[in-house]
Image (cartoon, rainbow, N blue to C red):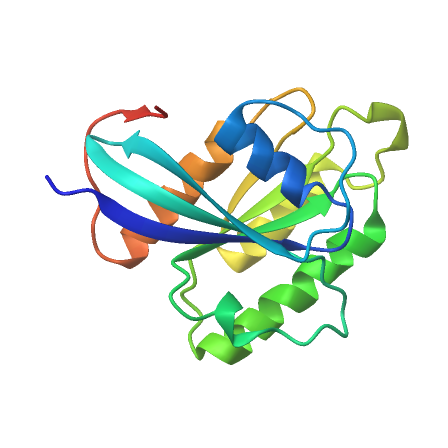
Length: 181
């Protein structure tokens, strides 16, 4: 079977950990401090349900409710990871605005996306409950994952879920197991 290329964009408010999630997934390590991201693209080969994929991960600049979306965020992007920090209500509210903008720009309601609550390691600062994240994802009919880029918990699951969403929307649903290479 030929390798399938998939482009996935991480979007969310500033400082929610989009770059940390990307680096943890692609390079298997946590970087504590970053300069604010302009936009970077990374690649990783994975095997999902017996199919090999080359995932192009677009680590976008942080958005807020007033951000103008570059067209590159919707052209040729197969799926979206909408990331918020479990320590920030502002970031949680912002993913709602981002999703609305994605729906407006794409002209469809069937967008493969995973709602991602990052920074679960910061227990004492948590303000967004797991239930709030699950409810929002259910309202959107989207997948939901909580994770910690720092502790590498749930990071691979996010990318497995987005591949699953992309394949379902595209009418493919391979049947065996999932392995990140």
